[in-house]
Length: 92
Length: 418
Image (cartoon, rainbow over all chains, first blue to last red; front, side, top):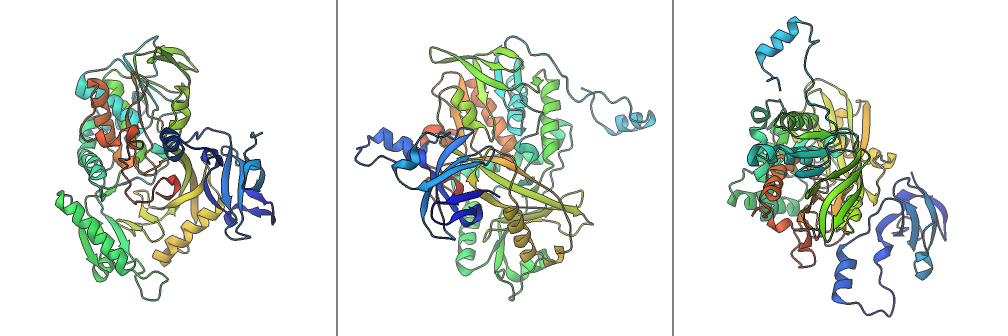
């Protein structure tokens, strides 16, 4: 079981949450994408081994959307913040 | 290679089975090969075997970071079938299913192909309609499919709980009789032994850590056992496709997820077919050793860990007991997890890459095992002739940018929902 710290509800078991997608592909506000950028963001994933920013929703809790910084090899969870630009700081 | 036969069996029994030769060699890596296949699972070994057998190319090395068949080939639920809706998938998996039928004789190794049938359950009118559509799609392509009523399902699998009192009463099912199971380890061992006999070098404990690329062409790989040069390199590493492709600077339409399966203690024969309940994505069968083997959906978060979480195991047990209440007293013996390279449309990616001489065969989601012989056969043809076989053409990794996805479930670019 992974313990995910919800910014509003505190640490909760991961089964209360639902994984949505990798946060790396979220477009920046105001940026006009080229077709190639859109295609890459839609279809391609870094999918490297290690730390990722991911978008999850606390579906069985406050239903808030959060950016979780999680290691996909060890399942360690470093932090989670509400969705927004602050969540996309470099991973540890 | 010493041919396995009744006479050899008797002869070795006479000497206490102490003198069987090793099934394959353990060669030292050579400095260069004509072709290198990264990944010693079913698909990689099958590719090497068919390169040697069908095309006479024996200067081939299969590089495996652990031991052969230690990845997804040894972690699946051994189910084979070809009941696909889309024609592209249908052709590929049907080609494989036909090869399974003759594989034991071909490899002189009993892979225990057991066409025990593959039954998909329907739980509502809408569900039965979709099964009928699937059966019709298979029928027009000459693939066997039978739509069963609830009564026929009950007669076919007497221990299945179809009753009206259950949470998901069974309305009927779609049966593919030629579907069934194959012993997964035997597939890896059989292909390895046969490929080795034809001269292919199988290099275990040989992890690829880098690729040598000069002017857009592949020239070799860096491994934990030194540099090995080749002008043709194929990435056949289910579960680590993105990791390997990144060494060549390639980003794939793949997200790696976790899938679990488990077996109960062995019991006497009680379930003679494979039963799959699509309403909760659960599949159950009985191994030849007597264990009840169960699997279900992903854990639904990206993972490279190869081990699962308990909540999903609880789900699988619950789904299984919904279908088979008579299994409630069985003890769970073993659980395990594997890495599934989920693509953006749920279908594999097979073809050449932007690097000349570098090919990829991966992204099989959770359906790769059943395709092993067909994938190896066709991929070997691609490597040997440097052309794309007709069946593989739709699976080009560049299909996404062109909008030509092969989305069996029609769910769009959400890899964990396929």
